[in-house]
Amino acid sequence: MKVMVISPHQDDETLGAGGTLLKLKKEGHAIFWLNITAASEEAGWDSQFVFHRQKQVTKVAKAFDFEDTMNLSLPPATLGAETRQQDIIDGINNFFLKVRPDWIILPDYNDVHSDHRIVFDCGISCSKIFRHPSIKRITTMEILSETDYGIPDNHFTPNLFVDISNFIDMKLEIVKIYDTEISHPPFPRSLDAIKALARIRGAASGAGYAEGFRIIKMIE
Image (cartoon, rainbow, N blue to C red; front, side, top):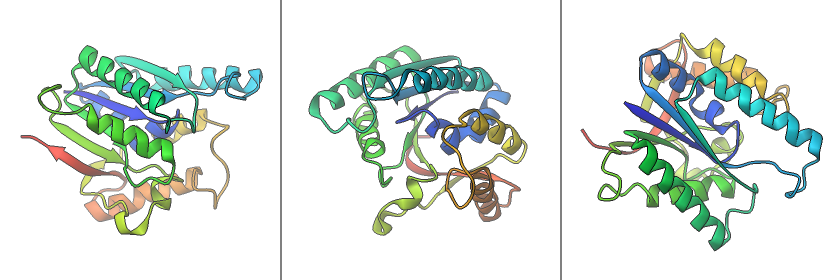
């Protein structure tokens, strides 16, 4: 099986599906990473941060041992423009054609960050079965600091659970690579909060630790 995670920002892939990706890789499946935005000096970040961020991403990609990665490197928080959305759609389509994934993992449509919602919309628009017939499973992932702040009426309720009990420690080690993105509790992107959420999802599914996903489409 070929599994592709699509992250609006670098770190979303690990927060939302890190344990699942590690488990799938261990089971012999091929895992792929498409990232949409990236910090750059042109977008206002200083050169030291950009360099450090690039080092983080290289280490993360190596830790997961992805079969292939692609980074559109669009400026964060600018994806609402029509031209940006076409860039996203073109990028997703191109990577779909290259990889021909069986399972795609997207940010949730109810995430509070507009980048997340736009990436979901673009990903779904690219996933039509007559255009990319390889795609048999579409799920959204749960990303702390975004999914948990969504509108209550569409609140994230997982209906797919993946037991990551054997991979929670490795997930946390990869999260640590993003040292500029994590902080201490009660900050949602803290190691304590990430582990606690995995424990809650595990309790709901009879596992020590789990990640939850929302099934959008599944074709058997």
